[in-house]
Length: 459
Ligand SMILES: Cc1ncc(COP(=O)(O)O)c(C=O)c1O
Image (cartoon, rainbow, N blue to C red; front, side):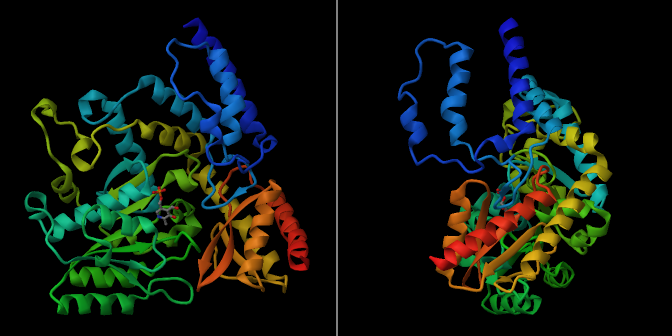
């Protein structure tokens, strides 16, 4: 244990230095495909190796292959933060190595999950009787929603397999995880209707109603509507109240994908983001996207716990228990489950509701300032209303020039931003989500963009 103690101290110091100054590393890894594979032996070691050598290789080989999500200039995809309390909780979770499939194999894993998800449900103002579960990703959570919806609409699925003609609806802006979930569960991609969205990238409810009517007329079985609160490209918010009017009337499962924007609803002035979501059957949001919790941590809420159980419970003899504890294995696909609630609990307690709300509030405010700066420059156009922590914009020029602009910014190594395509046009996208990103960071990024703009356009 002496060696563990020594290395534990060393590594905590290393992590503290890293978190203090992630900007000493290039934000985007400079490696080429296979560089890491080529740098490491093809055969595992026959004998154990000393920690010195392992750690030296971590710094020499692995670290250059890391793109630093904790870097303040990481502004791509949905940037997020791994906060210090969460990192310490991950250390404890690995030490405890609790695998919480049954209540009795670690009551704290099950009950801390219930407690933390209860706190969040309360901060969100969601119904108190909703059942919550922590899964690895939003993709998995949405797959669970689709499986539950399928069992609700076609209970025979459990024993006979799914009937033909079950239909899933989402907007043309929905995350690909909806189609992937439908592919994995055997609905088939052709049974996913991509409902058109309006000029602000929100699902058009009239088009949804028309699609459902058309499917009913063809004797198909509408099964699940996925509404997005905070779409991946533009953070657009589908009109959940109008969609819920349709799903309630039609008796179709309504799942809300709030993977990214859900976190913002803990800020009292952004609670409206979830207006109408209390009428849904299920909802996913990812603390690992915007709540200072490192990957992985996705929260899945479900109104009807019994349907989820019907979709997933299958208890072999060796897992039978006689206690009254809730066994989370009965409500989802995986048997084994990591103690993810521990890091969530550390974060919720360390920052508190007000502290987390303030971080998100400030990130939204600094993103707005950046968006205003870009909007004020006639060479650029803002391509989506935004309003949260993402700005979508482009040069008033060709797609090719915009692509070159993005490549130049990222190749310079100081910033990492990403892109999307909106209305068929290539668009640059900046996402703020790291706790170390400041108004100054965004000002420097804007200066860098303007510099590259002059170089790229002159070329
Ligand atoms: C709206 C939305 N839903 C789902 C996902 C998938 O998230 P995960 O990586 O947790 O599966 C994303 C990822 O960015 C997203 O933006």
